[in-house]
Image (cartoon, rainbow over all chains, first blue to last red; front, side):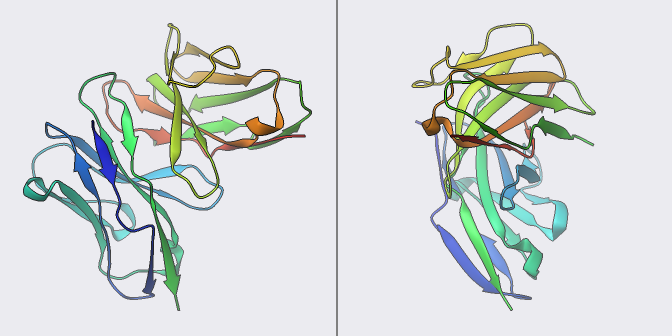
Length: 114
Length: 115
């Protein structure tokens, strides 16, 4: 069965430090991959997506993610974290069959300390 | 672009009454819309997939007679929680997928409290 794993329930980084959020997926074919961010009490905002081509994708708010097929990973990175980046981050996979449902990871809560 | 609105943003209702939540894609057409439920500090739970002009597809364990979904146009889907009970209190989020696309754009969510 398809699944998305975000190994870290929460991460704390200092403001200005670099960030990497991990995401691993289990899917037979090349999936469509996404990262979303959710601020408290809000809906989700699309940060970036990967369908094909260049495995390093750029998103909004200075985020980027790299697709590594050999590791079944799609980790999210940011070189310098801002306090406003504190939020919940969800990795997601769209299956190419079965109605193109989106499967979400459990989420990683990012805390930013001054 | 790609804005999805939800109305209301929060609602309090009495047990036994019905509540309707609207989800609109404001600047794109969405053949498919999704309804999710989110419990505190948890991920999203897909309730149903709504396709314009056809019946919604409900996930296992979701009561279709309790959570009525209507997708009357390419920009509007509604979720009606019928005979609401306190256990239906939750954060409901809709999303819309642009026609021909794979990504979803999410509404800001609706906080439902049933007293």
